[in-house]
Each structure stands twice: as C-alpha cells, then as structure tokens.
Length: 200
Picture 1 (cartoon, rainbow, N blue to C red):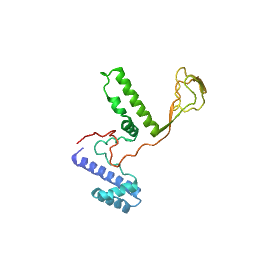
Picture 2: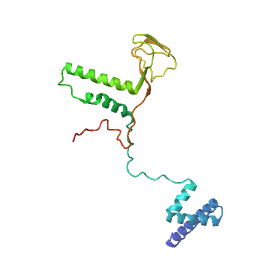
Picture 3: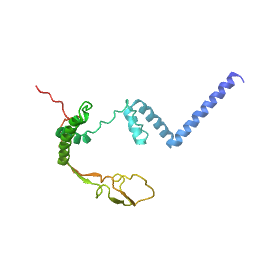
Picture 4: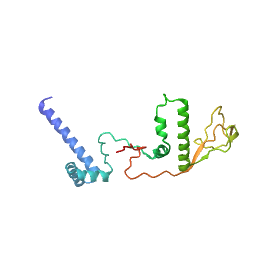
C-alpha cells in the first residue's frame, strides 16, 4: 500500500468519525442549530465559571467543592462539666481527688474524706434531685418485667432466657429527677472548672 492510499484511508476514517459525532450531537440536540448552540454554550461555560456553575446546578451535574485541608474536630461541649465545677466550688472535690495522698496518714485521709463528703453531698442535694430506679432495699427479691429498660436495669449473674427475671437487688440505682445548675457568664470558658486565684 502506497503512502497516498494510506493518507486517503485516514482522511476517510476521520471524516466518517466527524460525521458520526455530528449525527450523535444532532440526535441529542434535536436539530443542527441546537447542536451548534450547545457547542457555543459549552465553549462559553469553559471560559465563564459563573455560567458553568449555573449550568451545573440546572443540569444537576455540580460537583461538591474539594475540602481545603483536614476538617477541624468539633470543640467538645463544656456542659457536662458544670456539675463538676459546682462540686469543686462548694466541696473542693477536684482538689481532693487530684491531691497526692501517699504521704498522708489514714487519720488525715479520714478527716479529709469526711469533710469533702459532707460538702459534696450538700452541693448535690442543693442542685440535683435523685430517685431510686427500683423500689426496695439491697438484698430484696425483685422481678424485672418483660420490656425493661437495659439502661436502667443491669442484669448480672446467670442471665438466660427471656424476661421476666427474678433475682436479688444488689443496688437500687440512681436516676436524676431534676437538676438546677448555675448559669455560665457570657465569654466564660466552660473548660475552666475553677479559675486560678492570684492575690495582689
């Protein structure tokens, strides 16, 4: 095959491919004018980002923007720490728990525990109303009914089959009936349980 015939074959192939593409465009657009209009719009959209965004939104082909760097983790809420702040303010509970007691005598620890327990109990009773999850006292025989709340009743021991269960009450449980905690001032960092104290 000579070079002239090869070039002629390539030209015919390219021509056929162009005609096929044009036919597909016309079929999709409906008319030759529609196909030309689509090419014009596509060319302008490539040069105009605002037009491209509108077309993507209209056609449902918009892609979400790529994230810029790693997302910052959400800042934890300080709300759960409010009761701890109350127990520190009114009973110095955090001070007591964080103190190194290894060098203290049993008598010193006993005196400290008694004082902290007294003040912490008073603070809890002032701000939180508790009630027992189950009636009765420890050691009583109780029945756990079918459909019980597993977050309110913990079954231990030989648990087989389905409720109702009968067993010995090990702990009546605690449920918060209501609570009232002091508000936090605007701009206060809730992660600060107690501010540092500086005497000047």
